[in-house]
Image (cartoon, rainbow, N blue to C red; front, side, top):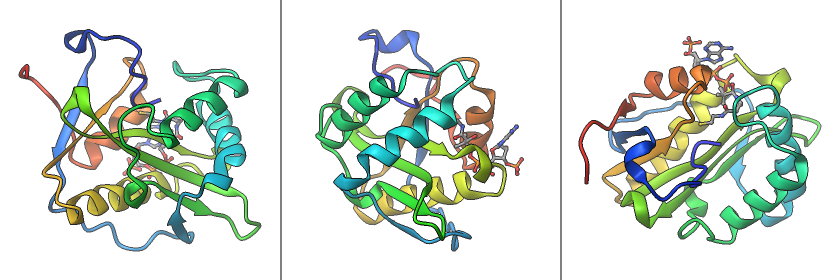
Length: 171
Ligand SMILES: CC(C)(COP(=O)(O)OP(=O)(O)OC[C@H]1O[C@@H](n2cnc3c(N)ncnc32)[C@H](O)[C@@H]1OP(=O)(O)O)[C@@H](O)C(=O)NCCC(=O)NCCS
């Protein structure tokens, strides 16, 4: 999970950030729409499958609880305009990005980004993240942040590609 929010000591957690302006994501290969509360069950299955075998792997029930909490503003006000899903022609979710305005990070945070295993490495993660950042810019947020678990190299590469850099200074 990008923002696990597990510890209260922010100095221990690598925080990544970028300015929200300047992203032109273009269109994704699959249709993208806003996340709906009815997506929760599918979203939990997607996260469970996407994170399996990574340092952030967790049981399905835990994903359901965490995602429900994110969508119900348990991690700061949920930002629906920047929380998006991509759908396969079958209606199955292929990928998702969720954003909240997390007070401790003093900026919107990418709370989750996940792409279904069989849809990965085709540009969808990049596209969803780009659209979320652009939506944050249109809402007037200057910066956005993400906490990436140490060891999640694929995620670090995705965020680097989208212009995120490790935040080097304290608040
Ligand atoms: C991270 C994740 C969302 C990337 O989604 P994706 O659709 O595969 O990503 P893209 O195809 O848009 O690739 C974007 C960049 O990510 C990096 N990347 C993606 N898959 C990679 C892989 N298997 N190995 C190395 N780098 C990879 C690359 O830098 C890639 O850019 P490039 O192809 O120009 O080199 C996906 O791998 C995932 O769901 N992982 C599990 C969940 C997770 O870790 N989420 C992030 C938590 S912070």
